[in-house]
Amino acid sequence: MDLAQLFNQINPIAIIATGAGISFVLLIIGIVITVTSDRKTMELERLGKYIAEDEVLSERERSTPLTDWLNRRVERSSIGEKISQSLSRADLKLKPGEFIAIIVISAFLVGFVLWFIGGKVIVIGILGAVIGAFLPRMYVNGQQKKRLVKFDDQLPDMLNLMVNGLRAGFSTMQAMEAVSRELPAPISDEFRRVVQEMQLGIPMERALDNLLVRIPSDDLDLTITAINVQREVGGNLAEIMETISHTIRERIRIKGEIRVLTTQVMYSGRFLSMLPLFVMGILYLLNRDYMMEFFKPESMPCGYIALGLSALLIFFGYLAMNKLGDIEI
Image (cartoon, rainbow, N blue to C red; front, side, top):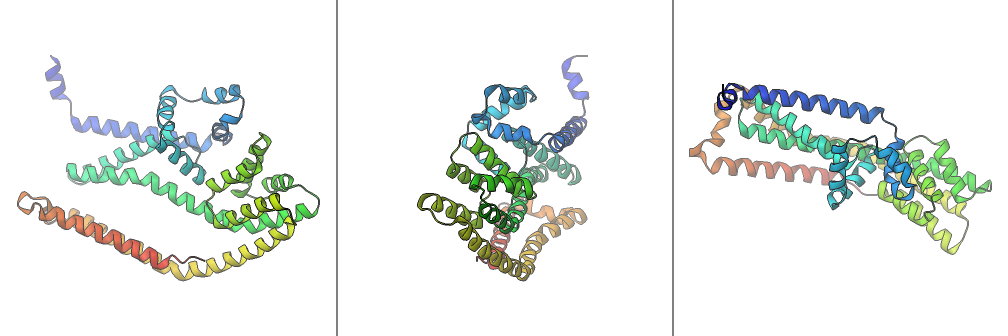
């Protein structure tokens, strides 16, 4: 039997199914390793340029050669820096290369599933791959928003703890260290990183700027600005922080009331945006010939123009609904 006959006997569906199974297993293993791994590993990587080289090398020895090669290629680009910053804001202990690998696996799995369910149409598979590529990014954005809201809710308690520490005779760094010990995550984790950077010799102003990069909060920006101004011109930092704490508490209260009033608008926008996609999916499963009218040669290019215009209208409608519910304080 020659090679041509051997390749002819191989079922392409079996090859795709085997690849999908392997990708799914690798995805599960990666998730388990990420969840159970020590959180200190990624913190050392992010502070690697300030730590002794032998410690960094001992951490890198745990990675595979393929992961290291992919990370080196990604981290040299501006895209890798943006991905690393985004993962840091979401507090996900992943490297940029690992996140890109998850995107590729997710795109392949979702594309294969929709291709198989949708009658093995290549257009449906490509659409599924695009959706699968966006799913990890959507998850990261959701984690960022949840963490930011939780951080803002804990900020007044942090300020009160720092005020009490400063009045008891603590320095600013000692007060931050008390915050990292006494308060729950995520604010304790972030201030622990600030204290670690300061202990490594980084100036307080730069360490606080790094904190603001990880947590893009307006309330935190106000607090950091007050600390930096007090360090330059002097003054009673405890009284300043007490005033800021009262202001932030009022802002959080008003934000909570507005969030309750605008939740209906936000969810209505999401539901109305997803409704056409659900209807198209149901019609495709129930009456496939009707939906395939858009892709027939005699419908070219009107079918694609109609679908593209519909997608644009849905997208702009979703943006308009979000804009109505986005009230700045």
